[in-house]
Image (cartoon, rainbow, N blue to C red):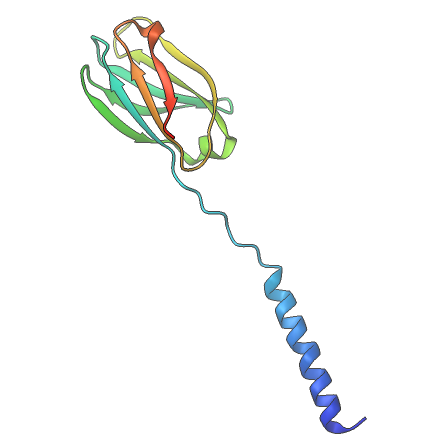
Length: 125
């Protein structure tokens, strides 16, 4: 084998190894936030929480007649499901949405109605 052939073969092997090393690197997935818009039509200020994976996270307070937007914690987004909870700051009935499936990038409308049992959680298209 000539010296030039050895050089070409060695170069090709090293190039292949270099490409294989970079091919095994996996890019981190993009984590889009989940936004929740809460519209409070109840007569009292409402505490908004989201529950999932055995933990409950407080999102914030929404005053009567107002709308607020919240971003879900990354831990809930990673779990893939959660339950939305609304309860008055003082005392009174609690609304629980039931478990909903969540995905990064979701936009959710949470309507709190004057009768809490009619409240809804809707995913925007």
